[in-house]
Length: 347
Image: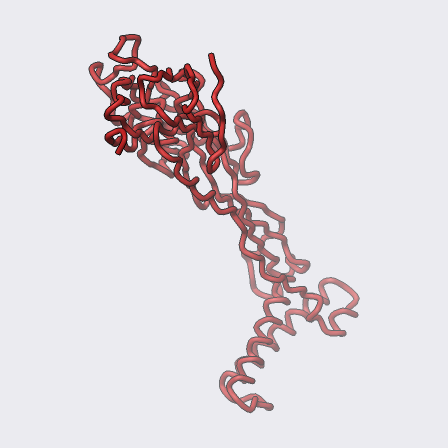
């Protein structure tokens, strides 16, 4: 067998048939699913004076222990085509056929015959978490009397008094009854904002702080015909994604149900010989419904075509005659025909 001359074009391999060749190997794709999850992590840290919140701030709902919680806030799915090792073929090249260019991806997936490769789709944007606001430091707002108090309970009492004084001063300013009133609205707004910030910082000593971080996690699933429902992953409220055998995490299942099943007459990808057989196969992808379940409750559903479902078709070499040839473009994710056009040779 003679070797092809390989030329890299826009990220795919273009195999030119200018020189006599006998064949070129290719794969049809199977469709994998890439799930992207946005996971929110919430971390609560109790305040230094949390035990005094009920006594001095009349707050009975303040938590005394630190806590970390995770939750899934968004799910996205992207289908991706990868070489199907069970669908590897060799396209026969013969001078009597006008197969001039065979286009494949870098990993050998057949993209088209006699067509120029299309530009690659832009990669998905990398997830960038939103910048976290600067955390207030309560100690920056403690006065000398509080800092020199001899015991935690005394510091808590003086801090509570400071908070109540801030609230009273803010009310007087808002009603225009303060002893020293600002000269204009802008100055008033600046003074009120400063008081709000000071109060929020001091309240952290009683109420604690809550911080949230969002991370992105990507999981890949390979659907297999005949598989109805299986465990995809486990997720814990306290630890996030955990191992599949960790019963501390809730089970999330994935279901793939065929919506369009080809009939026997449609399935021509068998050993039956066809006229002018050049070993050119394409997928006739099947349509499926993908569901992601939290136990039994669906959290994500989508319908799409997949290469490993459906059947295959063996295309006749008569499509590439000496007088009239064809251009065929395949879907890189499903292996199905996206476009086929005929043209007169020599024009």
